[in-house]
Amino acid sequence: MPEAPTTTTTPPPVDRTLLDQAVAWTRAAGELTLGWFNHPELSVSRKGDGSPVTQADRAAERLLREQIGAAHPDDAIHGEEEDDTPGTSGRRWVLDPIDGTKAFSRGVGTFSNLVYLEDEHGPAIGVINLPALGETVYAGRGLGCFLDDTPCRVSDRTEVRGAYLCTTAFDGWTGDMFRRATDEGLQLRTWGDAYGYALVASGRVEAMFDPQLAWWDLAALLVIIPEAGGVITSRAGGPAGEAHLDHPEYKWSAIASNGAAHDALVRVLRH
Image 1 (spheres, rainbow, N blue to C red):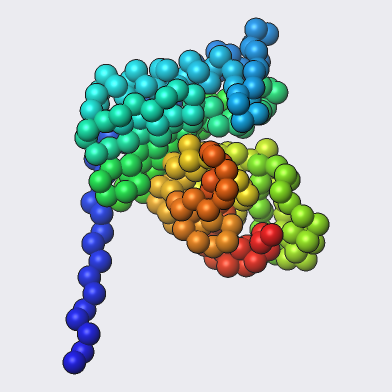
Image 2: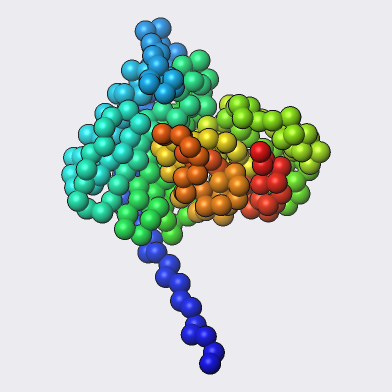
């Protein structure tokens, strides 16, 4: 007897109004953080996990929570700097008020503000706002990806040699990884964080790699990279959204690329 045909259900596009709201709120948070950027009274402290935090991180998350809570009081919120807000709507927002706090606190303009929304169908909205650079890369499920309100796509480069690979830092890199990257002819660049993923989504580099991420670092990318036509996986090539590292918060890893040679990148970046 022949097998019954399999069917797949494509999740519906997200409401464009929700996407527009998310972009506006994230840009407002970015304007707030710019007020602290290179400010002489900016102070940097350390959280329990050793990561840096500033007044701007906390103020930007508070602003985002107030905006979301006023417009969608039944939605849940998970953020880096405050306790979770429970919800009943089936939607959850994930906030990273400043991704790249190290860059921010050193006066480097590659920091960003990240906002993500998931609903009953899964990843729905992702926003990377780069306030010091005046750019916003964002996407909505089924709506595509945009750079400053213009549709954008990943690079169409198909060769690994000469392709640009960004990474946040070289912590976790081994000598073997460097040798494999060099042998493949990859061009390596740093000061990554979400900025690197924005470059992938807008076609300006071919790939971005992070060996360890928290959920608020990763979540928005799960919408942005696929909607831009790219591929995002864990460093082992598995689903990027599945936690696989033994750490209380930093349980994820990511390789994002234009997809043309993703398997080769997984081989290069293996432990």
